[in-house]
Image (tube, rainbow over the protein chains, first blue to last red):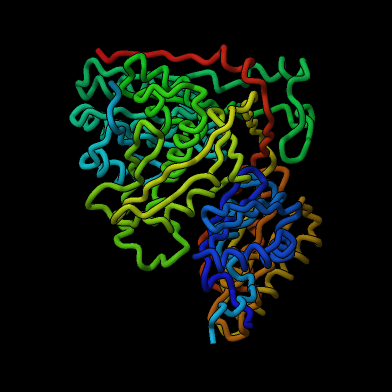
Length: 111
Length: 457
C-alpha cells in the first residue's frame, strides 16, 4: 500500500464565514469515501493546517455526496476583512488539503 | 393555477461579477426570474465606506449600469429581477432604478424596495436591554467592540421578497438578505408554498445555494478536471428549472461555456456550509445530506430530496467596525539564490523596523512562488528556483503607520541583495474591518421590515 495524495483522486472546495473556513473533500466513489472516513480525521486536518488554523476542526459527513466537510475555526487571521494574508478568503485551503496523503487498500479481488 | 415549472436564472455571485452571463440568460435563457446575490460579508463594509463619504451612496456601483441593460430585456422577455444590490442604502438604489427606468421609457414598471435589515439605530436599545449576547465565534460581548460602528445588518429571509412579488413588483431591491432569498422567493410566490412546508423550502434554499455563486456550479472554480471545462471565457451561469414539488433541474443557458455535471454541482453544494445536515437560514433549517444529485443529460443535473426542519427563532446580525489598517509591500528577486535573497531582504526590513522602533500588532511574511497561498503546509522550493517575490504585510493602528511600512522597500533595490525587480509601486494602506456577529429574536426585527413600491411614470 502506497501513500497517495488526495489530489490524485479527490475534489475539494473551501470558503469563509467570519474567521472560520470550511473545506469540503469529495471522493469519486464509495470505496474511496470509506478511505477518507477512516483516515482523513479532524485531527489529521488540524495537524495539516498547523500554523494557519488556530482553533478546533470539526468534521461532518455528507454520505450522499461521498464528501467530508471540515469546519476550521480561527482559520483566517481574524476573518476576510481583517486578514493580512494574501488568501484572505480561504479559497486555497481546498487545494492545500489535497496535499494530504492516505493509504488506499488493494481492492478485493485485485491481484 | 400555478405554472408547471418556474425558471430562475443566476445573474451575479458577488459585487463586481461579470454581467455577460446575465445578459446571455436574459436574452436566451427563457427565464421567469433573474436573481442576483451581490453581497458578501466584505461587501457591506465596502458599501458602508462609500456611504460614509456620500449619504446617497451605499448600493453597489454596478447596479445602475446592470439595470440599464437588463430592464429593457426584462420587459421584452417578461421576466422579473430580484437583487440585494441595495446593500447599505436600498432606498437610494430604488430611486436610481426608477430614474433609469423612466429614462428608458419603461412606464408602468413596478420597483420595490425592502427595508428593515439595517438596524444600526436600534443596537443601543438592544444592548441596554441585554438582547445582544456574545459573538458567535469568539463569545466576545457586544459592549466590548469599538463604538464607531460602520454597519449593522440582520440577514432577512425570503418573506418580504415574496410580499413584494405579490404586490406586482417587476424589480425587487433589498439590502442584507440571506444569499439564497432572491432565488427561492419566486418559488414561494409562484407555487404558493406554505411558510412551514419545510421540505420544499429546503429544496428552495438548496436551489438558491447552487445559484448564488454564479459559475461556481457551472464549471468555474472547479477542482476536478478543470482543464476539460469548455469555453470559460463565455461561461454560462446556472439556470434552475423548478417544479411545484420542490425538485429542480440545474442547467445553464444554451450556447454558453462551462459545464453542469454532478461533479461541478456537488462542489457548490457544500460551499461555505458548516453542518450540511443543519444549514441555518432565516427560512428553514435545511438538511442537504438528504438531497440527491444525478446527471439527467448534457449540462443538466436533477436535484431532489433535501429535507427541512422548522426555521430558527433568531436571525443573524452582523456588525462591522474599523479595526486598524494593513500596510504591505511586494518585491521580486531573480535567480540565482532567489529565495535566499528574498529572505535576506526580509531580515533587513525587520532589523530596520526594530532600529526605528516601529511597532506593529502583527508582521506577516509571504514568499510568492513558495508559500503565499498554502502557508506552512507548502514545502520549501528548490534552491535553483527562477524567481521569488517577497511580500510583507503589517497590522497597524493608523493609516500613516501602515503607509510608512511600504517606504522601507524601494531602497532595497540599491541597498540590498542583487537582482531585485518587479516592484509595482507603493501599495496604499487598506482599512481592516472587524465583524461582530450574533443572533437576535425575529420578533424584534420582523415588525420593522417594510416593502414599498414605486411605479415608473
